[in-house]
Length: 220
Length: 220
Image (cartoon, rainbow over all chains, first blue to last red; front, side, top):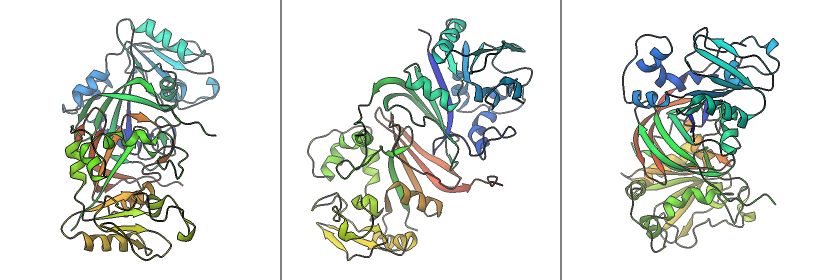
């Protein structure tokens, strides 16, 4: 079965974005520190139309995160907005005319919309929930994996539904002190660490999910 | 200068204890999963008066966390209580007649109290704040380090005050879904990873703190 994988960068205090995100600063205050490890990489820069960068211990980890046959993301991840598309000033997403995906992207939304083609990437808007989105993404991915692009709430939904196969947390040694948390309110569960790679700028921890649900005492 | 070091175990979702802690279950629901790696170790069991256990990849990490010359902890960590000592049903702490510290322990509290001697451990109650407690602990520790015993709020206070030198997070591959967070509301800061050791049951990440404070835009 086609695997669903999540690669997500968090601060040491567990935030995937800093406080007070805006359209101009979608990662919130301090959030730019989370992705410095990516912006430093020649491989990342090349895939996002930028020059320069370096090859370091994080390069193979980044390269391994590529290669998805399809991507799923939430509406907020796609545009930063919510509600009807008509009122969304970023309705074509963050990535300009040449988004870096080059494969089908399925955007979870409550608001129907015709597919959007930008460069080599087609965004399909899925309104009937996370499982149908996964079914469509799997069909589109062929023999490659499906990437779960985030954000945090969509990630938690797939995790809680037992639909996520593999999770890689890129843990950056900063404290943001506030913001959007990964896994806020997740269903208690046990995971299995399958790989750990530490570089000076980030620790990459890969887990197999769905190992076990923890049995917790219910609130009486 | 005598170093102040924090060893703390958290879940992958950043909790140092599960939800709804009680006197009977001070680590909250599911919190027992956090310390299974310790209870499995012969070295930990021996130092806590228990038999059995194993020697594994976590053993040297645990042994390195020992050797403090003094320990600082918060009142809630000590007894689970708050307020006047007279009303605290656990006023002599969690550890019975032979606490495992065998070195001076300084307990931060707002409520004065004479020192408490249990076995080879003397608990001194410090009412004038985190810096005086650290001064006393350093004086008592001699040429060994001072261990910051927790809990999470006391840890954050020392971290924010720039008084913590080294932090080791023992990251356990479970999701607790709620509870007490490490570093809730911490001042934004940059750390430096100095060591990473991954075992099947827990990933040990050691950071040097006080590398830099992040410059964040203030809420306007």
